[in-house]
Length: 346
Image (tube, rainbow, N blue to C red):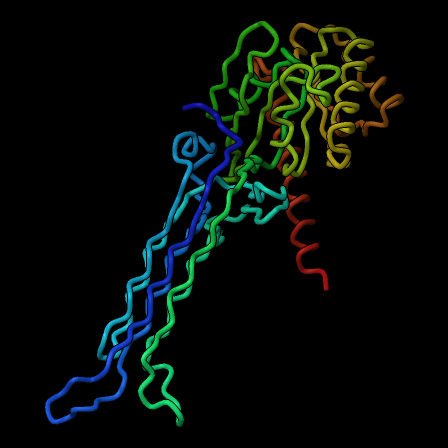
């Protein structure tokens, strides 16, 4: 399945059914009163979050969604049937914008969250509704109203607890494949990862967390150089960032790579650099210990990185990863707790 994270669609609510003009026709009642029923409301187009989806692939071909029309009212005060709603299933993390103005209309981030994308038109009132002291036999009814119509832009931002950040070939995909069931493409050349990957990490005691991997970043990514700029949106919602640094490049070059990553994130979206960060110095199996230590010292003294946020790992062998995952989970739990406290702030 192709990964699609942007789409444009058209939605239209159903037209409301017309009200009915009718008079009672009963035996021995030659001048029966009005009994026209109301028209049914038009159906609505409703978006609903489906956590089983992780792409907007559905909308590659399906571009237009129209709800059902409400039925007209009938005599004997029978109201028309409501038009059928159309349910559009979207991935968790779908942002909806108005295609004309670009304004954000909805941010669908909660499980099973629903949002009315195009409301159906109201059904018209039947003539029975218009009886008054001065008009006992109204011969008119209200037509149904048109439903909403609009074009929408859908933008998917993956929902993950931790986002992986690194230069091409730093070992992000190898790390993700080792800690989760995700199987991103892995090879020894830059830009192997062409699309975002989402993995679920299972720890002891049935604890889980989600990790998102995006294509590697290179200098100028915020201006569209390389591939990372196309997918940076997928780490905007994460609670923390895990930097995967290739320590085998040597202390100076690896530290320079970290500076570049921080700079690119800041220039793309400054709040990204405010997220809790964890640094994983990868390829410890092929990097001399003294170089690993020198790199740690550089990050602490020149990049203001906390020493307890730096870990030496080998994505290839798994060494150092269990300890790293525990800290990742702790940071995730802290981020979740902080979000809950903000929601309940008076």
